[in-house]
Image (cartoon, rainbow, N blue to C red):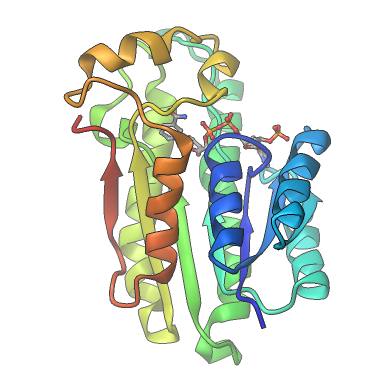
Length: 246
Ligand code: NAP
């Protein structure tokens, strides 16, 4: 039977590339999306056309009830979960901290921090040996912003990814004895639509000049790291930088 991977925010960008690669490696894949059903169904269709197995599931990771329903759908339709990829995340308009309101910061933290925590909780309930599970892996998609800080762009986003780094450190130790590994990839600038949605579409043009390797990353390059961590039997608590040297 195929191993099962749930990837949040997999309709496009890094999540979609990870879904396609996971299916190639033999995973049955749950492709979560929030609003763009057609994009998620397109990823599922690509996977099925290549002979793989996938389903699309709508859920907003900022809404706990959506997350619970999503995990129940995975249980019912794909079976026992082996890997959770906490990928869904957002930036917001470029903004200095002195101009940020509480609503913006709350939304960022709900999607980028609370969502991954609640998804991790639901995964642990299913994977942990203490709950009768067979172990598994959680791979978070963090960001180089967590150590760069996001000054003059989005310090709130950088801080949300800092929380993911710390969650990785603590949770990996907490659940290691339950057979669950917890790791994080930290991409630098990657060619996806996240920059345009944050009102910063030119970020992918300028970033190449300030990255030591002289170019931005491709979603497929981040997906390789996620899949390596999903299967890396003796690695836990790791923050893996995939950022062209920043
Ligand atoms: P993207 O192209 O903007 O795609 C985001 C995906 O997440 C979409 O499928 C979107 O679904 C989904 N999503 C957004 N909010 C959601 C929510 N509340 N609930 C469920 N799904 C949600 O983003 P990306 O660039 O691939 O980023 C993926 C991850 O990588 C994020 O965590 C991001 O912070 C991180 N990252 C990206 C970069 C970069 O340069 N691209 C760099 C470092 C880290 P819909 O389309 O249905 O709305």
